[in-house]
Length: 141
Ligand SMILES: [Zn+2]
Image: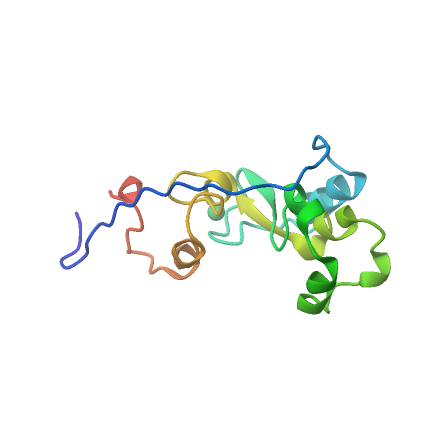
């Protein structure tokens, strides 16, 4: 049952962006190491909902597909906490633990929930919503 005064807003987003030219994607050794450490060693739960089901690794500050379009001087200025002494090529930052968030499949790629699908302010709401708040129609009971 929908609470009083709550309203639904349905929006259709058409996203049209360019990705810089890049070679075919492959998992780097660093990516595999980072994923293994965050999921299997540290047992990190989903950043949004704390589940440990269907965990995936999300590139947080920079996506691999954008590597060739990134101004790395700007990235250094924005992220002084990253250990730049380890940086020899873009994947050293992009596939590092510094650049990763663990998300469940729902909050990574899920329709109406995933960070790849929902604008950031809406996505962030899922982290702080009250337990009885219904975020999307698929959560109605
Ligand atoms: Zn989640």
